[in-house]
Image (tube, rainbow, N blue to C red; front, side, top):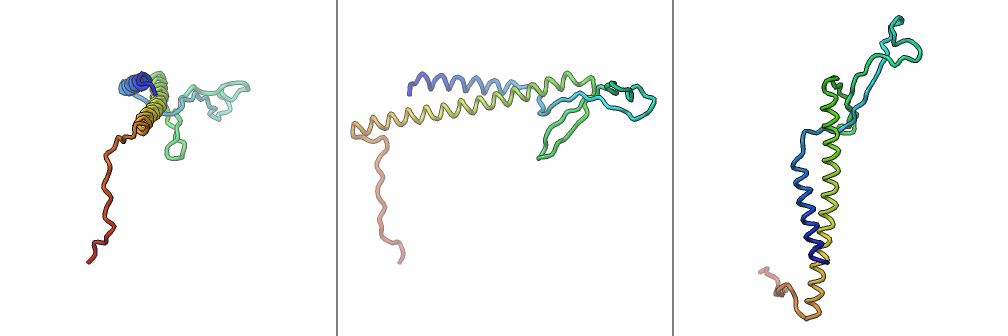
Length: 140
């Protein structure tokens, strides 16, 4: 494996770690705009083709296998959308960091394997030999 490849992977890994550390507020989930009907017969929302009252905003996410919904005030919608976007960016960056780290580990293994193959061809070993233990029992 080329040392330039290892150096470029190490550089990318450092960049990704830096990008993760620059993260802002984040939250997982999906923001949903909702309209609902109140059920009063004379209300405008009861008319055919009407959207209903709203919009109201809900943040939905999964917590320990269950869907949790939180109402988001209208003045917090923009901030919530930015937090969700930041969470998605964070997850994508972490995924890319793991992929890069895996490729780096593989490149280092290949480099170490090439060095070991070279040592075998020369008849030398990178590791010192270990003494074999005595097979005698230590029991009295």
